[in-house]
Length: 66
Image 1 (cartoon, rainbow, N blue to C red):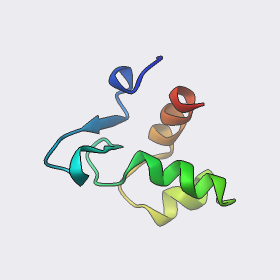
Image 2: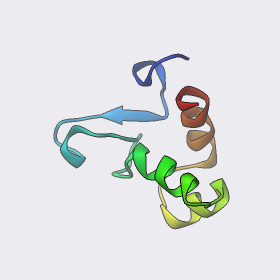
Image 3: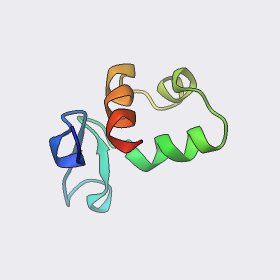
């Protein structure tokens, strides 16, 4: 995977969260993951704090985003 378009863990819809990239089947913005990690949160904490997304989705996003 090299772009968000190739990542099945995320989706973009102009009707959801102003067209921001979100975790698939949620309204959780991908940017929330990076913001929380930058602030010192762990992946496990993020998954707990933002229900709906899965650890597998987070790992896929990190693979593309890093």
